[in-house]
Image (cartoon, rainbow, N blue to C red; front, side, top):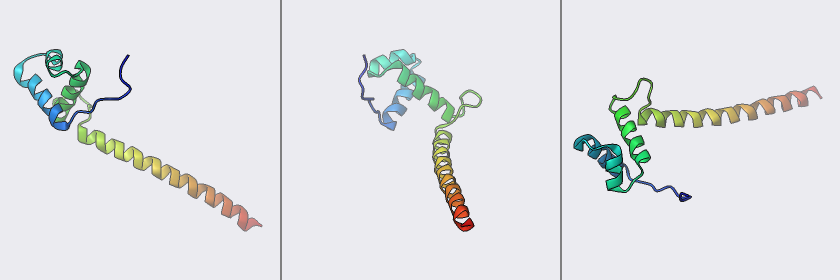
Length: 99
């Protein structure tokens, strides 16, 4: 059973771990074991680093694109809430003006 807390690693640690995979010719699993991180985590960091270098699979998002998508989704949700409030206000004021 895993911990309910996710361990956070610095960007520098992740970058160095990926560089070890790329420079040593060792597998992700071997490097992960040596560093004491899960192979799944290191595999994800390695995959994202490749995408950021333009070496990812077609359609795979870079970190910058992921951040922009997250920002745009948040902005879209805020705008949808604003539109809903304005729609309700318009209905309310239309009914008030009919009285």
